[in-house]
Length: 119
Length: 113
Image (cartoon, each protein chain N blue to C red):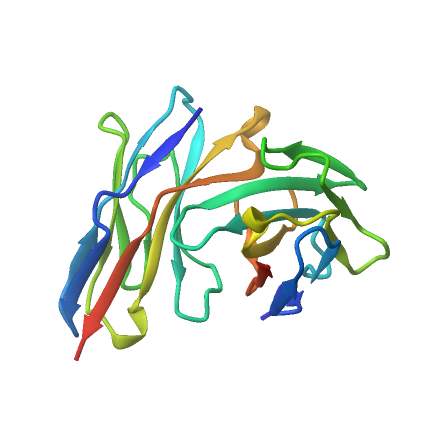
């Protein structure tokens, strides 16, 4: 079974600054995907960024980037130029990839990190 | 942008009652999922559904739970006899195929009294 651990229950950052959220995971799988989801106060789950384990290059999406360290089983999220709208709960999640590189939609989530961006 | 729609946003029920949570996945999606989040806890996988049958289910998804795609647009989660511990936010999600990008709805907050 896979486990995902987010060791920071809460983080805060000033607007326009950079913040990094930590995530570690444990798995015996070699082929998998990692995700960061954002859950604002509306509680909708919004995909922020995705990383394929077989890709060495770190994923980026605008102000969001990851530091994927496969050997260390670490997957941190960096938010640059933080904005007030980034205030949310952030979840790290793992998905095993099935045969042929496809997956089955079963995400294993971490406990979440509450990020507050201050003006 | 297309969205996954869930209704109702809040549902209150008495213990032992049946409840049906409804979801309208994105129209060209073929894979459907239910997750739940008990307040203060992790989001947990319940079930995945494809081609009118369950693909995978978790230990949580016992005989009290069932899913159905009654027509071409809706996807429902039924809890036959609700328990206090079923109180949670229930999220529906869908994906176009067996790929990794899931789109989530806004959730239904279920309160069992």
